[in-house]
Length: 133
Image: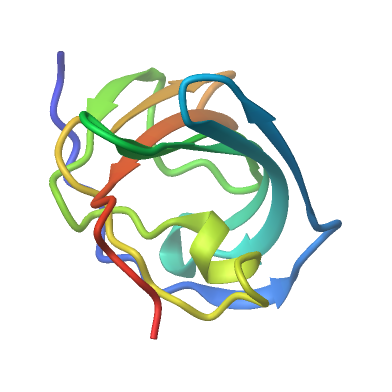
């Protein structure tokens, strides 16, 4: 697995498309669909469609699984890992509740870049004890 150190992400919101819809499953799992579109600093304009997955209880976790289309590719095709703090949750930043919270990723977060850098499949994990102020 190659390592790709992403630039610090200072996200400037230009638009948020759609909203969120929630589904609850067994075993304490809640899934929320979300969309977001924004200028991601030097990384280009992102249009993302994803799922926020929250599992409560023992071994709980918070995960975003999303696909983003990038208008100005900066990363070659490949599989990369994010260092903790290298990715900010699109869900917190733009959707929940009303956006504006910066929730950094923790370890285990990855991105698979395809289509000559234009498609990013992101799986990012977050601290389940984190709360937006």
